[in-house]
Length: 479
Ligand code: UD1
Ligand code: CA
Image (cartoon, rainbow, N blue to C red):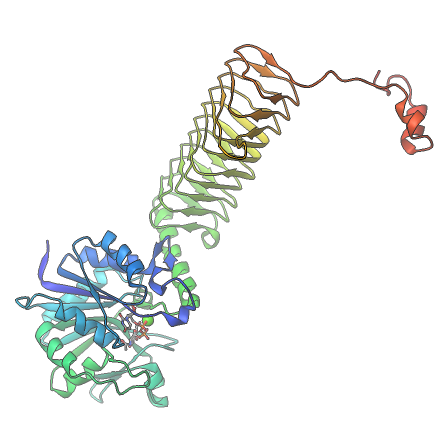
């Protein structure tokens, strides 16, 4: 049910300088979705009366993601005045005048934050009488975070940013998590009097805390039990640490749901993937995007699947596949490369050193070795010989190859598209198929072999080959 007293503000306007990236910080991904999308998903779960996201740096790229994920949300553009305090000031100004509730402010760079933690923050605030309640965490290494400064009685006094802190303050290990709940009226008043007297010349939201306290109001800080919940991402080292932490949670979740994961440290599973019980994931495997894996499948080692569908009992070994459908009871790899729109029907095989693209391999059909199959349809029960290449591109257009059912093609064929091989047809080894082959026919394009007797002895006298030829007995000579 919508919480009519609650507005959520997500801060997403910062530059993210420490990422040193062309990509805005909040669009860097973990578990397959942008940092900000994790926060937006959590915000959405809270079902607040109003959700406001503040943007500025690369605003269009951020706004696109926000609009998609929070269709009913408001997007507010921060002006040229920098700082988290200014961002909140402008967000609050966008709320309707008749709204008189609480404002939950969340930094956009805390991807592991969950709705349960926010709910208990709100409950704790509503149970007390403070003007504001914020989340804190006690860290072994608080470097970079704002520190919670408490008075002799243990009451929260103010927050000091790392770069503005004294040596004694830097030694404090309780940090500001960047997640706050404010009563709207007092927040509004206090934001109006925020200054910029700090090392960055910014309006700090954190100064609101000190101002509220100086005005005689209470502010409570609730420490979270697991500091990972509020880990802020400022640089790529923190991003990889948070990604590893999240991945460990995801892997564990699937393990408890009945998936065998031999090596959690080298197995990466995106948030949107779905894996049935009794699937086995072997080391070095990445299950990316919205990949779906059915029961009994064995994936890996060293396999990456992006947005794929894998059927029951399929075995997919040392394979890279994107946007492909791998049917039940199939075998893929080792060393297979399935490009978008490959469909391998039940019982089929895409074998060793085989690349496929935009092709359907019918039920029980096999492309076992060293082949490139593009823009092709293969019927059922066919076998494509080793080393077959579809010449699908004539330099201008891509053309289709159609192979029927129960076809047997020889090794080292080229199918020059557009071309059609009929049901039950055969081809000889080394055939270049330029014309359609009717059903049941044998297609051959190779000229009959000629043997020029004695050629080596006559033309390469004195070589090891010539000596071997002269010494050979009739049964070794191949006659
Ligand atoms: C901030 C807090 C710090 C806290 C830490 C927790 C302030 C001044 N400091 O520091 O006390 O320990 O988070 O992770 O708030 N943003 C805007 N507009 C701006 C600047 C930033 O919207 O003008 C957004 C950013 O996009 C980001 C969030 O606010 O999502 C926090 O900004 P960031 O620069 O990461 O703050 P920290 O230095 O980490
Ligand atoms: Ca931060």
